[in-house]
Image (cartoon, rainbow, N blue to C red; front, side):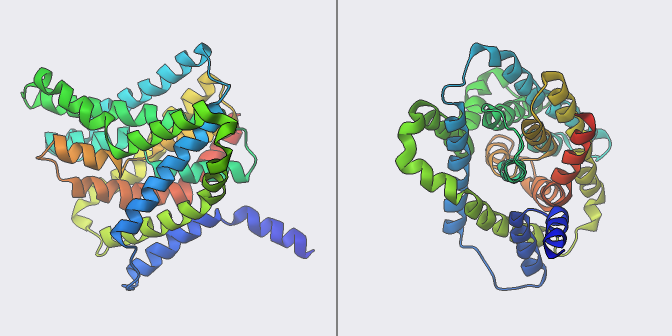
Amino acid sequence: MNKRIDEQWGEVMPDVVVAFFALGVAAGLAKSDLKVPQAAYDTLSILLMLTIGFKGGLALHGHMSWRLVPELLMIAGLGVLIPLLCYPLCRRLLRLNSANSASIAAHYGSVSAGTFAVALAYAESRSMTIAPQTTLYLVLLELPAIVVAIYLYKRLAGQGVMASNGHIWHEALTSRGVVLLAGGVLIGYFYGPEAAPVSTLFLTAFKGLLALFLLEMGLCAAKALSPVPWHHWRLMLFAVLAPLTLSLLGIMASAALGLPLGTALILTALTASASYIAAPAAIGGAIKEADIGLAMLAALAVTFPFNVILGVPLYHQILNVVY
């Protein structure tokens, strides 16, 4: 009887890493002196992104083929499509200027490594099938959205787009997140089983790193929402509705590609997510007129908690119906 109750309780409880995010939010709202030092946060984010890339590279080892090219091109196409959809919505419905519209479009077209990690942990804990190439989605969705949004802004603002193309690509390709994710994938892919001396450390520490990372994200989210900036109600409403709408693109793409359930869940969570690591760095340098604080309010304080607490389980339920 007790065992059955425990199993039922486990089914309704969120993943344990989400509890650390909730702890961070609660501590932040309670004005606790809890604080993750900046150096520790930087270390955690580096380790987390490197671990995600490395895990993906190990899974890809011996499984990469030309047959994946159409699938990967379609995923990259989503990274182009989403900012093109978000930009006019931000201009007309949110009444933002062109710089902030491009910024929001870049953040929501790009993806969240934290959301990816939560969806990955959720799928693994439920023994869902995850295709080896799934980690590549993170890189393929992150890059195009940033470049497209910057290009769109430069063109509409009448600036010299052609002259700035090299700078745009450099900003996107050399950002910390891209370097760590892509580098981790390459190392894992080329070394495979030979990476065993270090792979044990990365793989066993993944959930612990994610838990500590989410604790800091909870503190950041609480800071952005204390007090609640009600004058930005349109943006906050967008930040709730956007993941629900954009998740449909991930669901449709997953069904069209015939992806396994775990991969479909991760792709759906990615299309529903918004970047708060790579995009702020790239956009802050390329679009000086943009208010990055607005993007962080939407992406980190609203969309990220929504996806972590409610979104991922909801997308799982929808995919169960579709599949």
